[in-house]
Image (cartoon, rainbow, N blue to C red; front, side, top):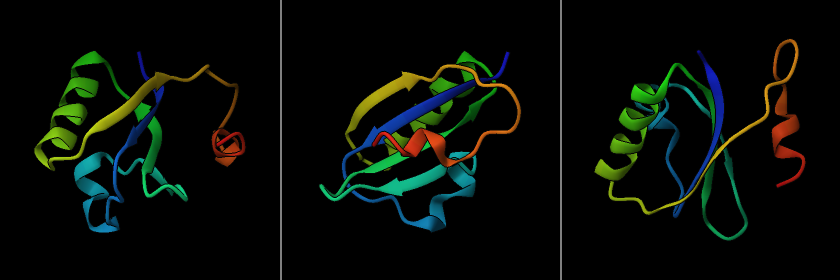
Length: 81
């Protein structure tokens, strides 16, 4: 079952990596980090995504499963950042 995740990494991830990171939405923080938000198919896909981030050499600061919401997602996840 698809779940929605928020992943925060240290440093900015360039948009060139979007496809490689499953086209997750990106937000850059004032502290220089990147927050990725999006749907992940299953635990195997999540582990694969985390391995790709690791392969970029970026420290992972946070991984959080977000509450499911009805209908199509918007940028509401970012309003509380």
